[in-house]
Length: 161
Image (cartoon, rainbow, N blue to C red; front, top):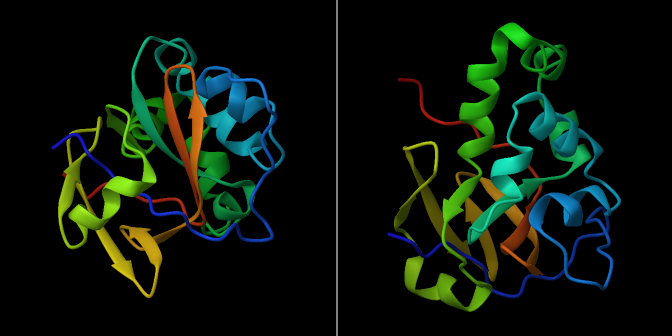
């Protein structure tokens, strides 16, 4: 299933601000406030070129505040070279192949979508709030040259294999 989620959700005060010119997903995140941790993780995982690729991709981008919610030491541990495989799995669990805009979410409430990591993630819509695996979409439809970013307030973790 290529569709993901969306609905125009009111931007949350902690949601980053994006610059006006359209750029690829990596450059858009790197140029926005609130994504230093995500950009560092993408670099550590060796996913920069992939996410700068043709796509299209739908990325659920956790903010710096979302990464700060992880248990103490988790992020530092994931950024170590010996944990690259686990970091790649977590980051690719935040990516869906294809470009899915917010308006498509209504059809996906209660359904699961397949992530690039390979596992499925469940979409729910409640009281106008869109959630993916418990993470709330706080800003939707940030269009990029190779896809779309939806900002989420929590890092989502793939199911254990």
